[in-house]
Image 1 (cartoon, rainbow, N blue to C red):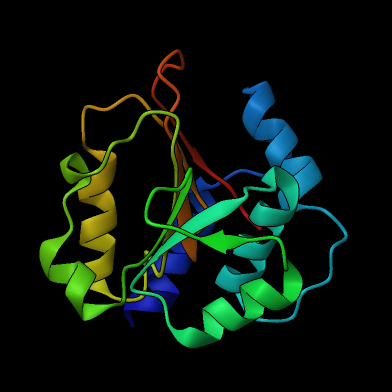
Image 2 (tube, rainbow, N blue to C red; image 1 turned 120 degrees about the vertical axis):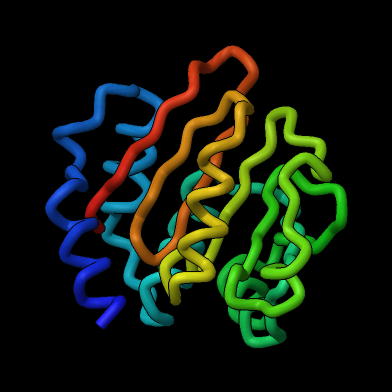
Length: 165
């Protein structure tokens, strides 16, 4: 029963592109997330692919990811390299290793973008996501129900967006 009620609560409180007052996030949502790119790998994977298509990072760091994710990313974006010092960091919160030892303060966050998958897979991953949002760091968070994205920009005020996809 966790997922249906969790989704209903999210849906009621989330907005679409018209409720966004940040030009940076509005452009990302309308030109990136709402683009006509047709991927068919599941909600979180499609959001990640649209993110990469919009921002075109050259490298990505994968934490808790499986080989299927790597394969799909290389098929869709042959230029993409996997690195441990990347501007984009992917976390799969359903990974047992990440659930027990995830600490945001262990990461150099300056001008980084963190992509969190499975933020509402169960109560434990939702709790981890909520604790991440409670940190004092300056970031923009985008909650898309299936996944979440944090944009760390030192000049930007902390903001939180809940967006229906």
